[in-house]
Length: 240
Image (cartoon, rainbow, N blue to C red):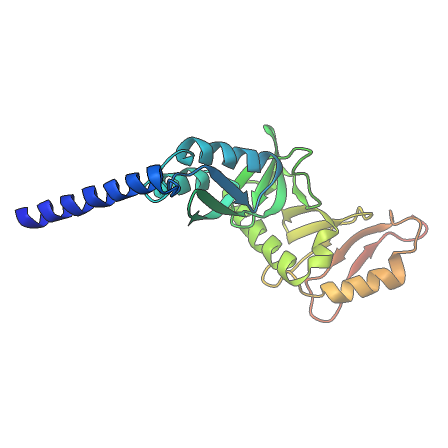
């Protein structure tokens, strides 16, 4: 064991000496991180990751800096879903970021927050990250168990009926189950609990044929998509 350690030490010292000679007399570049390239995010988020990477990696040996610590620090940011760090000799580090995707906005007493598709509260809504996604504003829909159900509903709608989902302005959980509101329409749309996408294509066809061109939809009280063979529509009588 002593002989092995001695040989290993000799090899390392010889390699270090050869590297020093090569760098000093032969123009071989030092394997030190001088540039950190980041992709997968932009604006304030890019600046945030760049600051972390520069502090932990820049000027450090390319193959001997603590990459695990750098990855842990980056992935501690709530909007980061995953990261990949690549060493690119002689002096470059490449970091690829996978961002969490916002699913809806959560309106709370502390501000408007972005909720991700894996149930993580990401950050506050600003002009830089504002996007066209529905909001969950009702306090009755914001307890933990209800939010879990709304996340499941929203993920299914976004994946299977993306055109419909992009038109939604609000999500709620009511006594009738998942309830959504659509742009330009004050009436709630009741969805099936076990199959949120049920009857959505039929509803869209019905809406385009009978309601989209009406100048006033205040008489419509609700659309109910929970049934198998019909879409009940609650309308006030004309002589209301």
